[in-house]
Image (cartoon, rainbow, N blue to C red):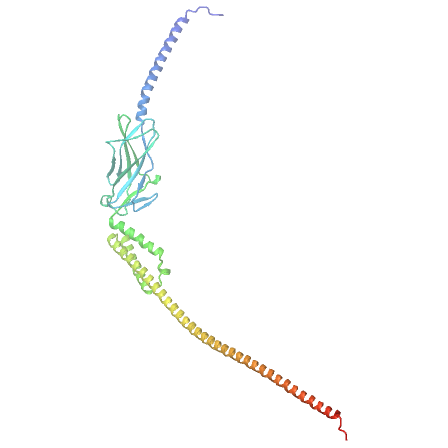
Length: 355
């Protein structure tokens, strides 16, 4: 069975359109409210992020994850990176350090704030004079907070962000040494350097040098005692100064001892060389005399040879003369012999006279 009466439709349609119009109004109002609040929220969310800071020299010592030490009267400087995390510009007017002894060290940029763009990081250096009396110098290690004060791009509001010292972030504690303590620490390091580079047990050989080294060791022991036990930094500095002076004197004494030994060794070598040279000179003279004698003998031998040659020549001449006389005599003998034979033959064959 179908219902054909549609009289109820008109009231229902009017009611539905009325609800839709109310929903649209609500939505529009919500969107207007959102669009109005978002810029304000963005402005109010212009927060800074203080990142890991860094202490700058000249410090006496810096132990990462523990502490940094400055000498009284020197300039301590902390570099603070500040990052703008949001989309709007941010102007930093102050950065300051608040120490645990209730003192602030401030970098004041109020006259000319430094602008940080969205997503960018700027570095701010807070510098001040380290004061031992203010920081209660000694073994005390101080914590601190770092604060950045900033405004938005138009200067409409002022806000700040503080980051506290955090051991888990490896933030360094701050220490100031008095002049005596700082000087003593440097002197102790210098003495240790002497001992490391010139070990007492192996480097020193001279008696005077060894005595001075022992005196230096005693002075250094007293310096360490005054520093760590009685906390008398002035006396400790005096003892370490004496230890360094004694060690320096020991080095000079050792150098002189070595130089004297080298000179003595050189003199001995030179003396031995001189004696050797004298012997060589004597041997040379003997050799020269022997050569002279040999030369004389050679001269005599040459003279004897010459004389022998002359004698040989004379003998040859005499022999030649003898052969000459021999042959002459032989000739005469033969001649006379033949003559005698001829006379005999002649006498034999001579005709006899008639009787």
